[in-house]
Image (cartoon, rainbow, N blue to C red; front, side, top):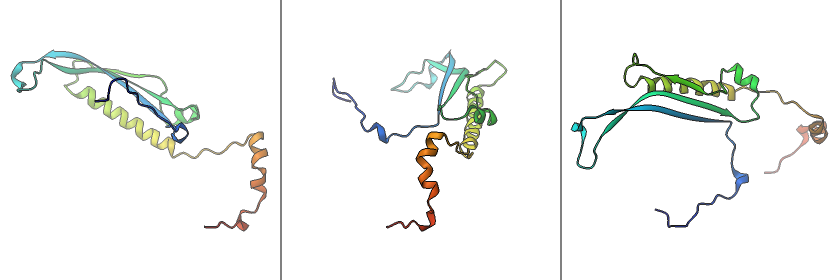
Length: 142
C-alpha cells in the first residue's frame, strides 16, 4: 500500500499518444439470493449478480470525420440493451461481447481508411518549399 499523504504524479505529457476512440460501458444487474452451498472457508456467497441490461458509449476523437463514423456504422450515441426473461442466463453478457466485437471490427476498418490530405492556405505556404524540391537528389547521411 502507498504511504499516507503520497501522490502519484505524471510528467512528460508531450510524450503521450492520443487514442482515436474511447469506449465506456456499464452493466445493470439484479441480485439473486444464493443458498450457502458454494461457501468456502474464506468466502461467503450471499447473492449472484444476474445481468439484465447494458449500455455503452463510443467517444471518437474530434479529428475523425463524422462521415467516416456513419460510413462504418459507428454510433456516437449511447447504445442500450435491456434483456428480458426469455433470454437465458449469461446471454446479456454474450450479446454485449458480440456487439463490442462488431464495433471493434468497424473501428478497425475505419482506421485502415486513407483520407486525402486537405491543404489549407496556411499549410500551402509552409509546405511550398518541400514540394518545389526534387526529392530524388536529397542524400541522407546515416
